[in-house]
Amino acid sequence: MAPARILAAAVLGLAALVAPARADDPKAIEALNLPMKVVQDKSKCWKAVGEAYMKMTEAPMKAGPDFNLTTIWPGMKDWDKVKAWAAANGAMGKAIMDAQAQVAFGLPYGRPSVPPGFAERGFFIGLGDGLGVFVSDPAYLKPLDTILCWVTAESYRLGGEKKFQEMFDLGISTLKLLRKVADQQLLEEKRFALERMSDLCSVERDLMQTFLGDIPAAVLKKAGLNGFPFIHPTDAERLRRLDMPEGDRVLAELMLVQLFDAQGQPDAGKLAMAMGELQAKDEPLTRFGAAKRWAQIADVHGSLDATRIRLTSVYDDWWRRWRVRYYDTLLDNPTAKSRTNKMRYAMVLLMAKDLEKLFALRQRLNAELNGTALTASLCAAFRDLGDWPRGFEATYSVYSVKRFDYDPWDPAYGRWQYAKLAAPRAIESDYGRLQITGAVLYARGVDKEDGGAAKATFDGLSGDFVAWPSLRALSRQQGSK
Image (cartoon, rainbow, N blue to C red; front, side):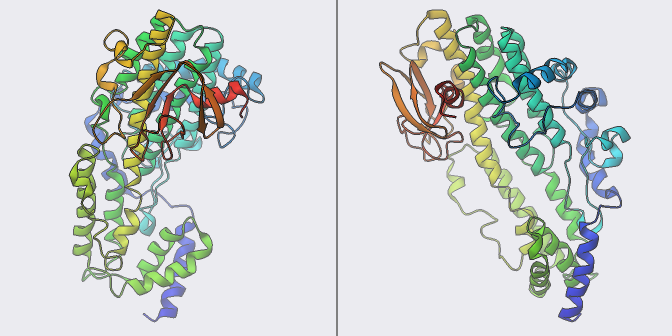
């Protein structure tokens, strides 16, 4: 086919790809739902959570940059409206608490797999059709964001009413719910769950900072010993049982078979249409150029069999790396992806491009969960003894689970850094320059260096990762933001 005709076909094809899918691909629905068939419906919590969501009253504002886990607090604008919304939707809390007893979240893939009312309210996972089968739409993540806004608002409301046990119960049960969501199969679902779990852990520490003077030691002790350390029964302190996403590989294979001809060679027209759209989905103005480029790649791209083998190799390599400890020597070796020819297997590289981001997210979540468990224990000791311990090891067994005193950014697999402060200390943070007093608990951060908590960021990318005090809550108290 001549280049002009390829591009013309590509342009027409792009219109079809960007239009709403006629129906979710039946093969994709069957393949992605197969693993959950071993779990009985009564052991899945998606339906009860979805039903509770659809009964909620409308939120005071839409979940987004200005209304989320990290922006909701009693001093925010329109807090009275947010607080009233939280108080009016207690049924959501019951659904989240009940979900703890279920084995899986288990929301099935495909719009036809959920009741019509769920699909109408956006509580579904859409799958593409035809050449767009790789493009999924986990629409339910938006309703989950609204639910998480409610959890944050309700937690602050409960804390304000000194219902601290209920406050922690809600936070811990929500973390357990998100951990179930993290077992869903698509990368976007897993990334969402890991990011929101991290944010919710920071909220839990905010709550401790805000209400420390009133929370009973026994409540904090329970959270530190039996709550935060056991969000998922098989995770332990290193999140070893958290799986890599498999659904994207399944969809990639379903897409690949459509992009090759009967002889197993790339179909230039289809490649231009499908991969050009996939590459340009976030940059609409580049669509024409992307389609042209993919039409050219078709001449040098590997066969169907070779592409399948390469796709499997890339995923298998990630799986092996995912299972080892953070600083295993295997991780120093070049990845299968980095060794992949950029032209011959361009399809594989495009469809597997975001997998490595999960490693950093899991490591941050490890720090967030461990740090939150240790913070609850530290605060319990403070409330019980009337002063901060001289060393964190004094909290072991009585207040904390020792094995969670584990810094995921320490190549020697050492402990968190803790200091009882004799005088106020300045710290540079995402929220400006702050003064910390009493005690500080921190991990090393991505640079693996102990910076003495002189500088900290919320994700540990620059400086250290400070779990206590809660810097966001402290900034509000000190008026930095």
